[in-house]
Length: 165
Image (tube, rainbow, N blue to C red; front, top):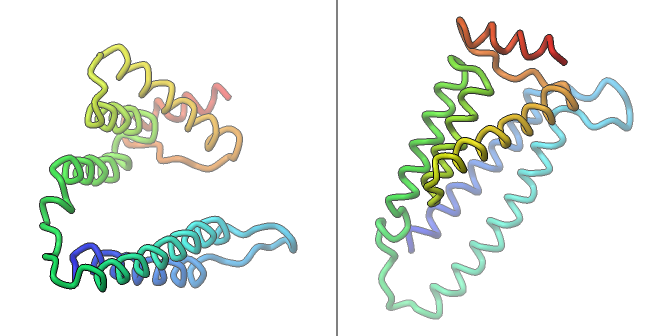
């Protein structure tokens, strides 16, 4: 059994658990006909479960065709860039609470852009700034989703920005 198949089955199991968890912990919509807070994550998870199921079937068919082939090496499955991307994502999730949404998202987009090969500092800064502001406007202003404000001076900055709009 290949490592890729094992990971697909593990992610499928986790996705099914998340589907259940989101439904079990989110209250139903108070207005009939309006989607509740659990509906969008559940729709995305349904898509993920379908895609994973298709991939698992494909992997099982391939493994039957090449029964004598070796399983993929871990290094091929998890290249160094993948590990760095994972570390960046974990760091983002940790600093999000302390720095707030805008500064941490700005740093996250800059780091990810550098990881995928963008080298000009001006492009990194401009791309990260535009992405962060666009996401902020969509979620904070248009959808009115409360984003993490941060602590200390970062919290004051977030409150200042909210006061502008």
